[in-house]
Every structure is written in structure tokens, then in C-alpha cells.
Image (cartoon, each protein chain N blue to C red):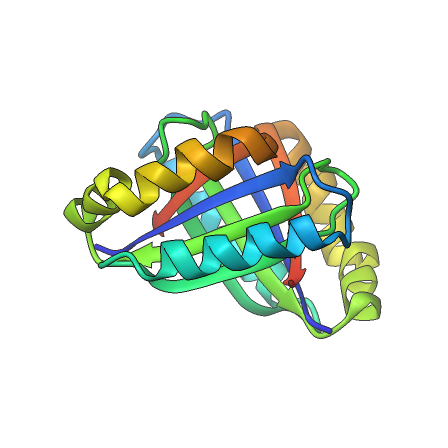
Length: 98
Length: 98
């Protein structure tokens, strides 16, 4: 059963800044290239009921593919070098068919 | 520009109960029938990083369609009669293309 992995987050960067755009582009390039990642999307979060500003979403065919992504060196490096220093707040949600 | 409206939530009902199934089915029947609602989906939230158990997601063509849904009597009645008494916790997120 496929799993949609999502994370809603905010960045330390100024809205509309070059740093913000570069983070989003590098995340897209890096994470969407990891084997098993399908339908990688970057969206803006615009509800005033949440302070979070962006969402990444991706689909895995099954749980082993999700685990392989989490453990992939490109993901681990991205989390250490970019995510931890530049993301101020985040919330993960994973969805399966009801 | 289209808007994806989502709410992640938990129910007061026992997992797997008839009450849970009935709530989800009634929500689907009621909310997906409101004019302007596209791609209504019900999903289970399975990340252990969140305590929330379900998600509703729907797409509106534009902001007026979203407002019309919010103000529609069927939505207002559903919120008063079912959502408020049966939902214990929720978080709304709305997404647009980045």
C-alpha cells in the first residue's frame, strides 16, 4: 500500500529571499532524485490557522521504500546540513488510504 | 489558482468502531456534495510523530469557492452537529503551488 509522506515547515529565511528559493530548489533536486520517491511536490501553506509556510510531499510504493529513503545518504546529509540549520518549525504527517 | 484545503484530526470514537466509520462516511457524503468541492479524500494519518488519526482533503478552484463551502449551510450544520462533538483535536493546512 502506497504511503504519502508529508512535512509542513517554516524556514529561518526571509519570505521571498534568495536563500528561501535556493533551499526549496536544492531540497527538490536532492530529495526527488532519491530512489523510490514519487510525485515530489513543494507547496506553500496559506491557512492562517497554522504558522507553517511550506509543505514537501512525496509518495512511496511501500514501507521499505520509505525506510530506504530515510536511510539514504543524500537524505541524511540534507537533514544534517540544510534541514536542521534552516528549518525553524515542522510537523510530519504520513497518509494511507482510509 | 486552486487551493487544497486539508484538516488532520482525531475522533472521540474507538478505532475501528461503527461510530468512527459512520462519521467518516457521513462526512464524505455531506462535504463532497457541497458545490465547488473537488477531489474529496479521506485518509488515515499513520506517522508516529503526530497523534492525529485522519485527514480530509479537498480542492477548490479559487478562494470564492472555498468561502462558499465554508458558508454553505450543509458545512455549517456538519461542523455544529458532528465535528464539534466528535472531533477531539485538529489542525488545518491549506496549500497552493509554490
